[in-house]
Amino acid sequence: MSDGDELKDEGFRELFGEDSRPPCQLYLISPPMFELALHAQALKRALAAGGAIAAYQLRLKIVDDGEILRAAEALMPICADADVAFILNDRMDLAKRCGADGVHLGQGDGSAVEARALLGKEAQIGVTCHASRHLAMEAGEAGANYVAFGSFFPTETKVVEHIADPAILSWWTALSPIPCVAIGGITPGNCRPLVEAGADFLATSGAVWGGDPEANVRAFAEAMAGRQDAP
Image (cartoon, rainbow, N blue to C red; front, side):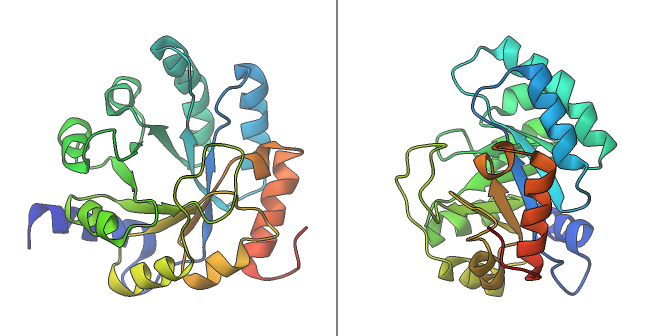
């Protein structure tokens, strides 16, 4: 077994245990721009909903490095207090500087191998794989802790260039113990087929930050568990 395989197996056991995948959880993504004090309060509200949230990704666009680091300094302790992983989008260098729990890499943001060398064995490294089985296989072989597929639905958060089918989640979970994240336009009202297809995490942004974050997270938790028809 290679060192990369050992890392992946350890990460899987830490997150999921030996034999089975746990219930699907939320992976929160920040708005692309926000007023820091207000968003910190919104994040606290979201996390107050309980254990449905596994991770939070800081994804600020069109801002300088200093603003990203200031946001990380303010938001990381909020996530730590709730035992929620703090992931930085795109920038492995800034993830190193701020002490984030990990980094999420797009296809143009460097490799999981580079991120592992920079951030260390314990870092959580995710890779965007769009709707590509080939990219997911490559990410897994490179030592990613999770792969992200999407977009599954239209979204206003970013321009949609790749449309994924839920079948890719079923394919991946049958093939690999590495967790998979579903992303793109996911709401409490449309998420259940992705859960049933095998998504380990649902990435969401506007469906939580639009309105009351705590109520929205609770609606997701109900929908993911199949306990009610969410709005």
